[in-house]
Length: 350
Image 1 (cartoon, one colour):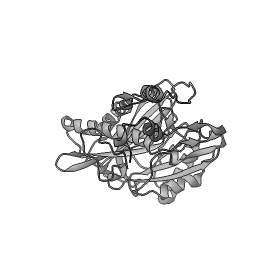
Image 2 (spheres, helix red, strand yellow; image 1 turned 90 degrees about the horizontal axis):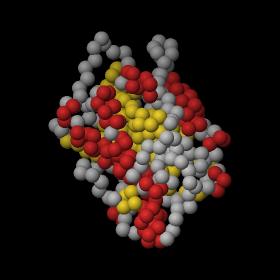
Image 3 (cartoon, helix red, strand yellow; image 1 turned 120 degrees about the horizontal axis):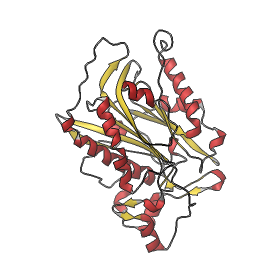
Image 4 (cartoon, helix red, strand yellow; image 1 turned 120 degrees about the vertical axis):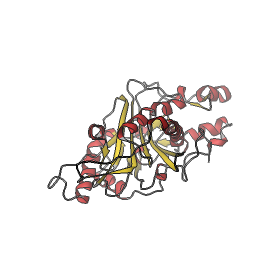
């Protein structure tokens, strides 16, 4: 997974994927028929997560977005259900399906104990997808959750099917990095990219718009739209980090986003959600809970590794995505095709 090019100073994980963090799985359902180009991506942090919650946090860089479940995550510092990604108008459907899944797994919810907080995050795929048609079903969401595995595709798949990034084809991307303390630990990232403008896109310090037009005298056939896309960043680690530290990691997300030249526009929603699989918080717990966490003055490597993984994940989401024609024959080019036209970027392609 990921891309061929070495990005940053940290070693990539075994599979260069968010699933390098043990226990983490990803499931996807892709819908691609004519005007309908959309889907679902589910990140399952661990089995039986309601009974053994994980420490978590989120950070909103720019809040032009419609997520579900972040308030409780930041209040309590834990996550207790799979993370579902989909398109903006399917958040309600995804939430209902996720709730039904958790109720089936845990019959005590809403009877002998409290209710459930299911995180659902989104991006707007209305240019390539008939978003008003509400084509994502509860069955699609359940299939993504129950079909989650260590291996999964990147690019124009799952929730990323109808997304655009830098006005080229975006979607799902992943990467991971290894940091060493008393032993090796993994920091994994998965992104849903639907943000930024083509004229901003910079790779290895080269502005792609200028380079393409200089070499080929060819402009990208895109509308002159405002920046109104979004990016969702999911960060997983097996490091012992507290929820406060995970929020600090989330706050570094914009540094990774901006590596490709992207800015955070008025109509853009940039949201990061992070969790650690190290500490387990039992649902029915004692009066006191012991939490192990990294010393704050040792956390810089985590910040840097996360930024590198975000940067690569964004590029990977684009390089693995093919050209797509969707709603009303609107067509979006692939970054892979653009880079092959220009040349000099073979080290990114595989």
